[in-house]
Image (cartoon, rainbow, N blue to C red; front, side):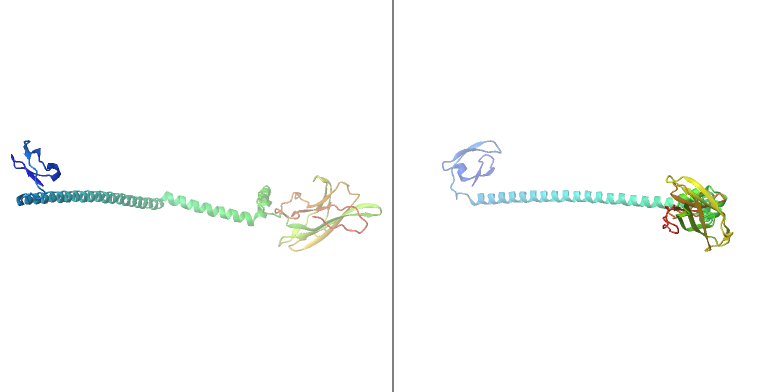
Length: 300
């Protein structure tokens, strides 16, 4: 229901229970004056009061709608501003990345230009030519040292150890031993050591055959006795063979092996790693004493 201040005509909407059936004293919030409001029936509102109430309701509804529209507009504006800020930040980051990529490309292009310009300078050409010449010279030295190692060792004997260290055998004599065997036997009641072997030619041209030195070796690898044997041929070519044998009456009992080598300064052989016998010497176990004409198989 609606009540009206009799002093300033300000209207108020109140409930029926707020006034009660006996009426009550109320004070105007606008003019601060009081009056005694009489009780009204629930249906006592005049048409003018109803129209005023509807007008007030419509005004309140309009204000509520306007406030809601303002709130929605403010929220939309805030969201748009946030989206614009995020888009601007994204565009700024993308631009920074693009700038960094462009900068790297420019730096790489600048470095390539500098390298190309430096390569065209006379000093750079000289250095490049020197490196190429050095590699070519090194290659020639290696090839010559490999295929001409025999000549190198003949001229510089100290190089023999270098070749042996890398596993390259060098036969400076051009001869080798094969089928080396030793035999202890009894003849006329006396012990005799018989040593036999084949001399094999290794070179395409004839190679002089020097005397063969036979050395008896003990268990400690020390030579305890040696003698030389003149070969039956003067020279040998590649693939040619010459057999020789020699005998030693009453050989030392401590002899365990027999070593063959060529005279003429070739007492130390130069062989490939893992070879069975040296190129210019060969060793075979000294056979134990046996009956005449009985051979003990060779042991390498």
